[in-house]
Amino acid sequence: MKTELTPVQIEHYQKEGWLIVDDFLAPDELSALNAAVDTGVETMGGDKVSGEHNESIKDDSETYYNRVFLQRVNLWRVNNDIKNFFLNPTLGEMLCQLANINGIRVWHDQTLQKPAWGNPTSWHMDVPNWSFHSPDAISIWIALNDATVQNGCMYFLPGSHQQADYERKGGFSPDIGALFDQYPEFREIEPVPVAMKAGSAGFHNGLMAHAAGPNMTPDVRRAMTCAYMPDGATFNGIQNILSQERFESMEIGDLHNDDEQTPLVWSQK
Ligand SMILES: O=C(O)CCC(=O)C(=O)O
Ligand SMILES: [Fe+2]
Image (cartoon, rainbow, N blue to C red; front, side, top):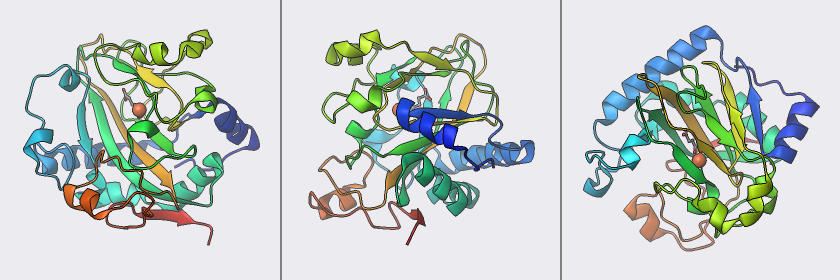
């Protein structure tokens, strides 16, 4: 895992809200992660979020969203290889350097597999949907196979995180450009397509606007991602992927410090 960063890379991430690290994984690390993702997905069966056997979030309907991707969340809970991968302190320290924070917890991992002829991923921001608000959330997106303009690679809107708020967020409806109605000023920013070779990784700030194109090919576009929160982030009243039990037990302002839900990965202390 290529976790060494240069000052130029850190500056790029902070200014633009994203960074690509080519060949982030060595070929053996990539095959191990690919295998772990397949095992994890199989273990989860039809559940979208591990541990949540909730009929309303079962993946069994042919909706527009199910043709955006096959999505399985929190594989770290059902697969130790994935847990060791994303809770690796060296990775945690790298993410803290990029985000300029002192400690970091997993918010959730997810595999996002855009099927053959899959729908695009609409323009959105991540953090406004999540159960904490912070300008410093960071996600890693690893290409498990080549992500190309043809099969639905991501697009970033550089610098948009600096103008974003927690109310306007775009969405996942078929209206891929709804975010630009909410942020007319973003129409001026040139989107950057980020094709990535298998094993390369993208890092993005949770308030930076991003999207992905449709998959125009007969093969799946496979990615494994993990979203992280700064240690010290607090509950904002939004449920998102929290279990009903956890959601009901939390008051707005409570620290997200439960290692069963949001494990600490690295901390300076
Ligand atoms: O993989 C995609 O199409 C979208 C990924 C995304 O939105 C994210 O990682 O936050
Ligand atoms: Fe996203």
